[in-house]
Length: 278
Image (cartoon, rainbow, N blue to C red):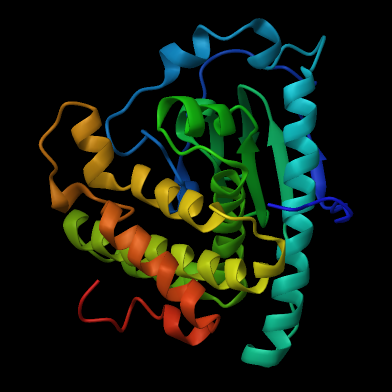
């Protein structure tokens, strides 16, 4: 992804020097919108985090050069989402767009939706309208899940911003209310539609930054979508996939909905809640 000359967003809250201790657990409404690599799929990456050098676990004494690059990259990608959604909201939705804050943390952090560690993966908290990202997730995405490349990482950020788009449109509140009145299986099915819509919206963003893409970038994003499908993660954990437990969608569904958004560039194609077939 060609980001040279792209501004850095000022909507960054960097908590990586604050450190922290103890175990963290994500709760409340935050459970609705986690791009977890293992939290719901039975893949525990805590041992991976515990084996990292101290500076990569949230040690307040130092940040590695790699983490600094990750922060700069995140700020630039966030800026592209601000430009795209700032344009598309009035053009396609007839309303203005208020951009989210991206919280960078290392190891673990707290939010109004609960605490989180690197094991939960990136998440969006509608209570404070902030997206949360442990910059070490980029390494996990590449090294542990096989989703390599900068555009795979950009897709992760775009997906969390897409949850903010859903929040701006009132979709998160509606789905959360419906989930509270539903049984577990039905609630999971609603969450799958929510996640697939976010993948589609990330695809919409991707087509509007097409001029920044390099050869292979789109494939990187599609690979990332496949690698964090519920069926793939459950197989990776040595389990037989159980569709009634899915909360993010299969690899095929995630890839398909991202591609749908990319090919159209229109928010309207991302209505997963009206789709008969996901």
